[in-house]
Length: 358
Image 1 (cartoon, rainbow, N blue to C red):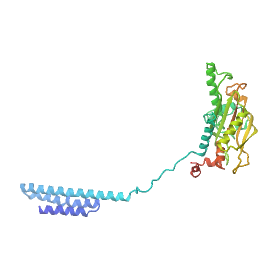
Image 2 (cartoon, rainbow, N blue to C red; image 1 turned 90 degrees about the vertical axis):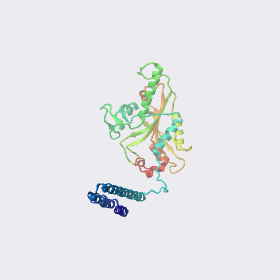
Image 3 (cartoon, rainbow, N blue to C red; image 1 turned 135 degrees about the vertical axis):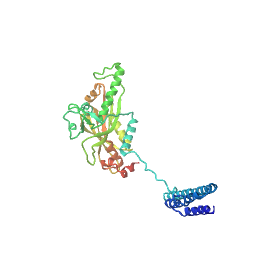
Image 4 (tube, helix red, strand yellow; image 1 turned 90 degrees about the horizontal axis):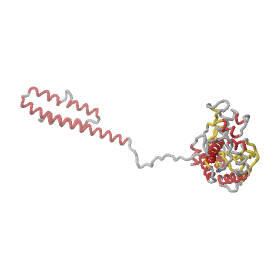
């Protein structure tokens, strides 16, 4: 028994001296391995009597269990020490301030589009939407643009697959096609209500609510420099009714510009021009009374009384219905509002530039 007690104490001491799991397993082999001291004691029982085997065997098993318990305890202690060391090495200082994600914001052109929609919305204008891949009829023909017009040239327009030689598809060059689409649906709806049938032939000359709509969106042309981009934004406007005059156009657009730029002293000039879809037509220039742009006339839009042919293509009788239309570039309005001198900055995606508008 004294030998067993000595072996157990020696095993405990040896386990305590093991500082790594590998050292511990090597020490274990000295006591519990195939040639270990406990195993040798079990082999030595062969010469003992039956009674002695029972007593000695029980004592050896108890010693073995005690050594195994000490071994497991040391294993756990080494594992706990390793975990603590890892936690110390990977510790987080929870007293440090957190890292916050940068807060995003709307693009300056999006801010301008929202502002345009809000201002015209206060005047009773709806917002129309439509496809960016457009048919030749809606983009050119319905807008009274002749077949030999330069805008139909491949040098100015992106044509795409899917159409035919006589009716090609293209990336819309302006958002005016949305005005035509909206007007056609508007007329069709009220024609059915008035006539009580699905007959949509001929021009509609019955009574119906006015068409008052703006059409903001992306447009595409073959052009690229500091003030032009192959993709840019436009916002077209249309007001059609029985007594809508050029005077209404001047009043509406003057009020819009002064509200948009928050300047009641802003001066507008309507300069005679030509557009195939309006007659008469005018370019619209603005002049700031003060600031870095004071005294200069700046072109911001095109406008005019809607051409009778365009009124007909909407399905309306031009003898009864008349209206005005305008088209402006939100990108240019954004440049003027925020003092940006290069259009390409809006599309470069430079966070340093865009974060100024957050």
